[in-house]
Length: 213
View (cartoon, rainbow, N blue to C red):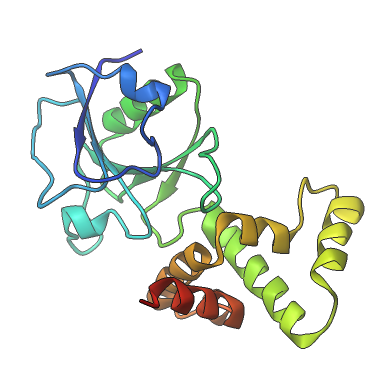
């Protein structure tokens, strides 16, 4: 495994306190991870094989800036997928820009894979891969519930027994937190304008309750 160091700029959704990956970090090594975002700026360091910025709902370009589709360097983004408040999964979404350094991508992939993670590389788009796929499904299920199409139990059972899913959309989005779903879905909606990402009513209510003093 490549050596890596960590700079903590805030709470990490990818590697919460006690995660074994944190214990493997050293100092002055060739890959730098910025957990909790980039802080005030991304430290430029061409001597690093890669600088990896942990992302939440934002795009990597927020941290690096953009240049008419020519942006890219040894700075990459990443996020370890987790369903809201559930424990993080084993999937790392590694975010590249149009001109990202191929050697940096290879180094980052090798680091995470050596640590036992599955890695997928994606473009710097809102929602990356997983959230772009699942958030419209959660919004649709929540709207079906509001419209009385079926009960939550019926929809969940249909997905488990009819489609072979491990859980249903309502139980999954509620377990992960409807307020968190609101935040992720709203961020994608604001950047894409696609109505399927507009947070469903129940998610809006949950967010308002979370923000209520």
